[in-house]
Amino acid sequence: MNKAPTIKVSVRRLNPKVARKAHYETYEVPLVPGMSVLNVLQYINEHYDGGLAHYYSCRRGVCVDCALKVNGKVKRACLEWAQGDVTLEPVSDSRVIKDLVVRPRKEE
Image 1: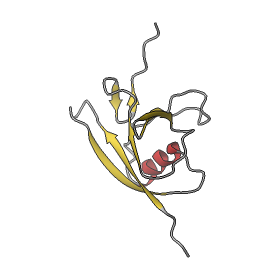
Image 2: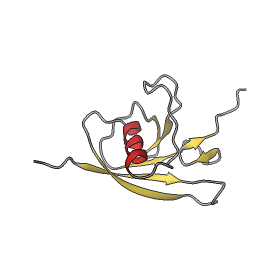
Image 3: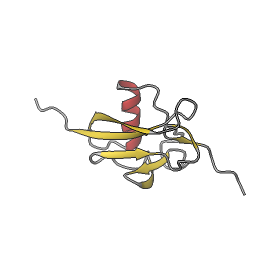
Image 4: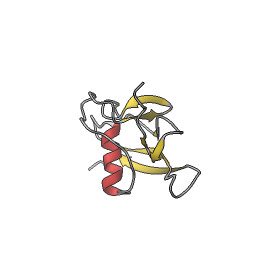
């Protein structure tokens, strides 16, 4: 029986209440056909680190709450397919609450 292929996922981690400098942690995740970046984050939470902070709501691309940078480009985690090794970062360094969760922008 063949073992499922895996991808390396580097996640930018920062808890401003504990440290001032961010660091990257890398996880190996089995790649399942049809897996989204949100599924990858959920796998990391369930199998490696339940303290990894990320946010999502609708899981259908409607709310935009799961927005993050995927290999440097802003994407919705629920709509972006996991296709290979990936780096995940928050959409804004200045608004980080923890890890990939950022403060929402104020309505103008």
